[in-house]
Each structure stands twice: as C-alpha cells, then as structure tokens.
Image (cartoon, rainbow, N blue to C red):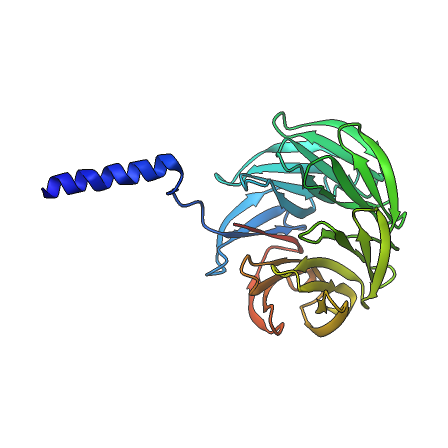
Amino acid sequence: MRRMKMIGAALSLLAMAMAGVWESPSWAAELWVTNMKSANVQVFNPTTLKVTTTIPADKGAHNVTFSRDGKLAFIANVGANNVTIIDAVSKKALGNVPAGTRAHQVAVSPDGKMAVVCNPGSGDITLIDVRQKKAVHTMLTGQGAMMAVFSPDGKYVYVANAGDANVSVVDIKKREEVQTIPAGKGVMAFEPTKSWKTAWVTGPDEDKVAIIDLDNWQKVGAIDVPGEPHGLVYSPDGKKAYVVQRKLNQVAIIDTASRKITKTAPAGKRPDMIAISPDGKNLYITSRDDNKLLVLSSADLSVKAEVATGDEPHGVAYRK
C-alpha cells in the first residue's frame, strides 16, 4: 500500500509539471553592476551582497540591460564603441558587437530579437540582430542619443536625445523616425509608467523631470528637481519615483500623484544609476567616485549597506 501511495504521489507531481502547475525554480536573484574603468560587470548576491562572478566586458562598461526572459545581458561600452553580449545564465561573454561612438545604453525588444544601442557621440542608434549577434542598421536620431525604451508591442522605440532636448519616436520595422517630442535640455533616463500612459524623462541640464503623454506623443508637464537629475525608477505600486541628483550627491523621493519632492538623502559621491528590488524595499545606487554600491531603504532613504565595487561603477540592474 505504501508503495502504491508513493507511485501515486510521483504520478501526481508528474501530472502537475506537465500541466504547468508546478515549475522548477528559476535562478536566484542577482544584482549586476558595470564598472567603467575596470571594464567589467560584477554580479552580486542581493541578500549577502557578495560578488559571485566578475565578467570581462570592454572599455568604459557603462550600462547593463537584460532581455525580457533574463537569459541575455547587454553591456554598452562607452569607451570601446561596442556592446558585449553575455549569456546571463552561464555568465559567459558571447562576443562584442560594434556600435556607434560612445555606446551608452541598450534597449531590447519585447520578443528579444532586436537590440537598439544609443550612441550619444555620433547621434545615432545601432540596430542589432540578437540571434546573429550582428549590427544590421544605423540611423540618426539626434545629438546625444542617450537612452532608449521599446514600446510594449515592440513597434516603436523611444530615444532620448540630450543634445537636441527631445525624444525620437522610431518605427522599428520601417526604420524611420515618425515623431519628435520636446522634452528638455540634456534628456537622459526615459522611464514609462506601468500603464504606459506617460513617461518621466530626466533633464540634468535644466534640473527638471519632463512628463510625456505617450498616447499623444507630447510633453505635458515638468517637475523641478535640482542637482542634475540622472537615474530614475518607480516603486512597484507606482506611487513614488526615486531620482538620483548627481550634482548634489543625493537621491530624492517624488510623490507621483502630487509630483512633489517629499524627501532627499545623501547617496555617495557622484551617484549615477539606480535600481529597485522587486518587493520595492531596497534601492541600489552606484556611487562612481566612491567605487561603491549603496543599498538604501526605499521607505526613508537610510543607508542599509555600502559595498565595494570595481573602479567607476555606473550601471546597475536587478535580474530576477
């Protein structure tokens, strides 16, 4: 009887797995930090804050982006004018793909087939066929093409052009710019809200965060944020935005309903980019001149930990 019960239990587990009710656990959560001067990316355990792997990239490893399934990582190397593609599971670099001048950031299409590299030095974007790991097209967008984001359907890519103080809307299939949206001087981080009704765009050259209506492709407002607003993330519930104020060496909380700064706190020396844990409890900020990764409480911005990184950390991303 006991044997029959064991067989029955095994068959039940098999049936659950086949039906998709039970799934094997995915990889453990990770924090990835790019180090410009060290030309690498470090992988941290977000619980212990210990480095588990260091992966070589190229000169000026600047920002890190993951494919939607988390299996590939793309490192924009601002000093080498290329992108390092990494197998994020095996932690092995798969090669470098040439891009434009001062490759700054990579956006990946929802289906994972296309990647777009923003090149502020040449004012253009490079389209990469991910499967072939090959650059297939380059097109001008505007001076200082900094950062990009794909629309949820993958039809458009939004490119923040710092020098032209606008955002280009590019039809990725037609490979042409279909609209430009005024956004403010020095536009950098482009962060759509969860609903995709609006996007907030940091403008460090005018100390503002622009608000863009994504339905009508127009700027509808701006928030005063002193001290060179740089990296930006939202809380999971969308009620708060966290903005790095690089020149003031601090981070601010903005209430997204009132659009007012409610709190600020120190965040190292020349803080750059910011990420948030999936549960919304922790903020992760790279402090370039300190060679540190700071972990802050999202509730009150108190520093929970400071972790040594490589030389000149810049990009940070949470892989879950």
